[in-house]
Amino acid sequence: MSEADPTCIGRVRHVLGSSVTVALDPELAGVAPIYRGKLQSVGQIGSIVRFPQGLLDLIGAVTLVGIAELTPALPPVENVQIGERWLKVQLLGEIDSLDKFKRGVGSYPGLDDPVHFATPSDLGRVFPAEKPGLLRFGSLSSAPAIPVCLDAAKLVLRHTAVVGSTGAGKTSAVAELLQNLVSGEWPGANVVVIDPHGEYARAIGSKGSVRSVLDPQKRLRVPYWALQAEDILKIFTGVPIGKTTLKRFSEYVAKARITFVEEATWLDLDPVAVTADTPVPFDIREVWHQLDFENRETREEKGDASTVRVEKKGDPAKLEPTQFVPYKPAGGKPSQGPNYETHGRIPELLRLALENPDFAFLQPKADPHGEDPLKAAMVEWLGGESAISVLDFSGVPTGVADLAIGVVLELLFELALRSEKTGSGIGRPRPVLFVLEEAHRYLSSVEANEVSARAVSRIAREGRKYGVGLLMVTQRPSELPETALAQCGTLIALRLTSGKDQGQIRSALPDNVTGLADVLPSLRTGEAVVSGEAIVLPVRTTIDEPNPYPEAEDPDLKSWREKSGIPDLAPALAKWRGLYDSRSKTKETAKGKTDG
Ligand SMILES: Nc1ncnc2c1ncn2[C@@H]1O[C@H](COP(=O)(O)OP(=O)(O)OP(=O)(O)O)[C@@H](O)[C@H]1O
Ligand SMILES: [Mg+2]
Image (cartoon, rainbow, N blue to C red; front, side):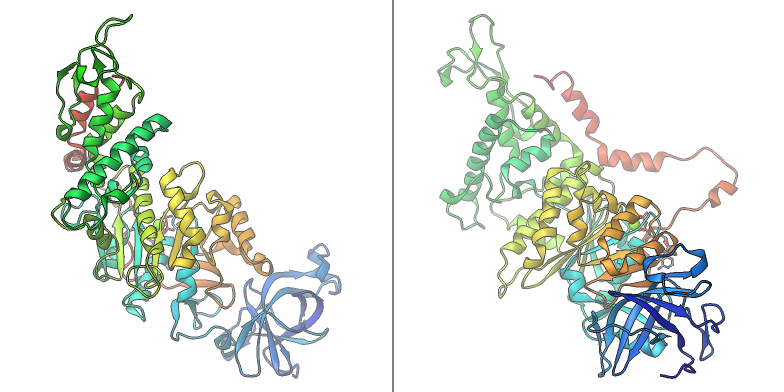
């Protein structure tokens, strides 16, 4: 290779494992030579360089740039002359004699070997253009003509994390990926987007199905009865449950489930096999009524159930508790029933939750003579025939939404676990990808509730084997447990401003490219460092813009320029009341009874 080659930029000075120090040619003006009429960025962090080695070309990425006198002697720099400009390069892979790029290197460059910047045709050999199995994501920031494509199978099934500070472009990046997915090779994709802020409907639009907690026409329904008895009680009451209460509740639930199975025409189940955890419907109001009954019961003779002293019969359907004649203290009659106050406030908390309209979407009706309501609900969650299903949880209080999200994920994962590879269903026969916005909310040890934390960490751990992928989106990677990022095969890191978050990403990046983490705070909106299994080399990528964008623009200050007036708050209040219209009633009935 002659030095007259216009792509030659310097020579190898030092080789330390896969880290190579290159002294730049002193004649090279600046660090951006012009090649074929275009400025080439050589001295940019992340730029790709080539070391010709006979039949092979070694490929590396620039991770450090400096002038010797300005830098304290870093170990690999020792051999560089004072005043020399140098680059530190990480070797990443090689192009073989058949022009195929492979990750990892089998040999190392020799001292004084020439170093070249990668021309667009070199880059084209490293970064394959769009071909089957690849999903276009953007283009190289250092060479916009070169597309950056991701391996769709790895992206979907080996879990992916999308991280970045607020406004860095995470939601837009995900929307763009999903748009490319369905408009390209995968019209039959199976993606469930958990959308806590209602941003995706516009971007996915006609290509997907949108279900919302608040939309009466396309209501998102999440049946509580599909859960295990213990979780049901936890969800509704939100407090720790004592052993005795849990045991009694489970007994009543099992009984109620058996009654339903015996009656149901669409279920072919042996009632003997039904337990408190079998996902068949039951009426929780009945169970509440029984639990509440024994919690207040008074009797003439403590040991004789037939001597119960009912004052006014309650009504489970109306959530009216049974009233009893108060017990007489000091051995008088009537006395307390055998389970008097064993359950503390639990029955009352349960009743309040059942009356709370926030929980209404958890209580779809189940008809023993209709159709399987769980099947119907799950088909809705999966978006029916649509490739992408957006589940919009906006407008529900965060705590409740997080719980419901946990329930959806848990139930769909249970379904995937039980779908045979060669059969129908989801998972192994038809992989499913969950897009999880605000992933830290479901995984952080402080914020997460038990149900969703369990579901998400289970999918992260075991999902791959069952064809269930996770795409976690978060602003706060430092709040994810360490294992969560480690389980992601692919990392898409957009601009990150906090040092703590950068540190987390640096430790998640492979050793040889931690230098790329240094660009994180200076990335533009819509730019990312992409690294991991789905991409040939870790690169700085300019992400394509989605069309249309998700509904995530910042509001503007236009209205502030106009004359101010009294704001009309009525529509917003009406909407609020629409959701909470029966709450005031709930509060009133609850008054004075909570400790009863
Ligand atoms: N690829 C892109 N190119 C240019 N501009 C972009 C790109 N992606 C996003 N933007 C701009 O950045 C804005 C914020 O993007 P987005 O809502 O996706 O950020 P985010 O990281 O999801 O923020 P948050 O954490 O607050 O949800 C968008 O409204 C859009 O104008
Ligand atoms: Mg967002």
